[in-house]
Length: 155
Image (cartoon, rainbow, N blue to C red; front, side, top):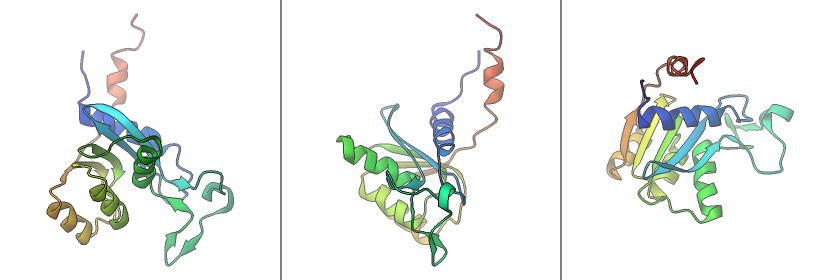
C-alpha cells in the first residue's frame, strides 16, 4: 500500500482549507504544524461576522482587497486566540506568501515554509526569509486521488 509523504499530507490539508475561502480572487489555505501534528489552519476570508467577498464583491483599494485576511495570518491568529505556540512550527501554504504574511510567519517563530504554487514571489519576502533562516521548500502535490484507489472497495 502506498502512503503519501508528510509534506503531501499537510499540503493536501491546506488545499482542503482553501475550499473554505470566501475570496473571489484567489483561494488560499494554510496549515501550521508542530511535531507532525496540525495545530492550526486558516483560509483567506473576511473578519469573523463581517461581509464576505463572495457575497458583496471584493473591497479593492490600490489593487488589494482590504476586506480579506490572508490564510497564513488567519492560521497564526487562530494560534494566538487559543494560546497555541508557533515558535519552531512549520507552515504549509497553497501559494507563496505575500510580504506581509512573510513578516508574520517570521515574527511568529515559524521555522519552515512549504508552499505548492508560486504566486508573485516578492524578492523582499525571499530575502527576509533567508535572513531569518526560515527553510523554504516548494512541495509538488501530485494527484493524490491515485492513493484513494487503494482503498476503493476494500474492507
